[in-house]
Amino acid sequence: MMQLTTKQLEKMNAYVGCGPHLDADILILGNEEGTDGFPEEIAAHAAARFRLYGKDQETVSTLLDSMTSDRDILYQDDLYSSEHYKYSPKGLWTNGFWEPSANAGGEKIKEYLKRYYGSIPTKSTDRPSAFNTHTARICLTIKAIKTDSNFPIETYLNYDKSKRNEIVAFTEEQLYTPNPRGGVATALMDWRPLPRPNEGGWPPEYQALFKNADEYLDAYLFKKNATPKMQAFVERRIQYLKTIILQSRANHLITIGQTENKLDIIARMFPKQKLEIEQMPLKNRAYYVRMRLPEKTLNIYSRFLITSRLKIYIA
Image (cartoon, rainbow, N blue to C red):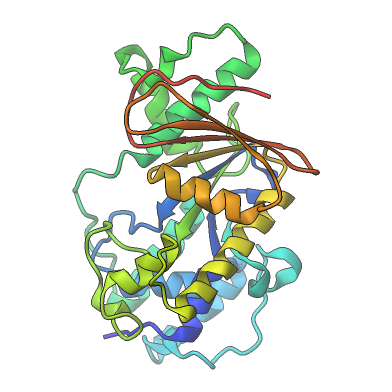
């Protein structure tokens, strides 16, 4: 069984997510990387992130072809000492890197699985997380209000059956993809870099580094008992995401889930900037935050996975 190494974790920590980050209209900050219908294939998700993501298709094809003689060859840390990243500042993974779209990343994982097993395993039929659907609702609301300041807020945020097809289409066709048809460009950044099918389990592939999830999670939750080793990983993660936020043209940031942790992340990214926080009249803590940076004003919408009336502010 593949066991994640420190070098591989370092590189996965630099993977910031999928979508056109620098050209996005809206950035989305989630909790952690998922497994997109292949919950048992943790090794494949890890390998895609530390070996295939961020690279052009020609390089990826060459790497996958090398699996013909040894299907585990991509797990060797020092096999490729010099690697060029197409989707990274200056082509270096140490500056952070990303996938140009969610579909591009998904296809790399499928191709890896096909090379590894000879065929692509059957995708899970479990109901997917509501994260992307909630994100689509907020994106559609922001888009509508920018066109019409009097647009009824509840249109997409309540369960209006007449809008269901539009929400589903936005989720499936426009989220985290360059040049969406008639829509806003979005890019996903996840706070925790290790992919898991859910936040409750701890895959055996990660146990060589951490015996359980606590050592990993404590650091990303900024708990006092976090180990110095993991605190260093977290500080680097903050810098990777901060760089993207500053370089992106986006001035809207959506965060869903663990709202206080997300606001803590933002505050640590920009410790000298004042956060103008307004708690929204919703259950389970939801906030609108405005941060005035020298480069731009960042509008942040932070909420849990709930559906309720949400007031959207457009700067």
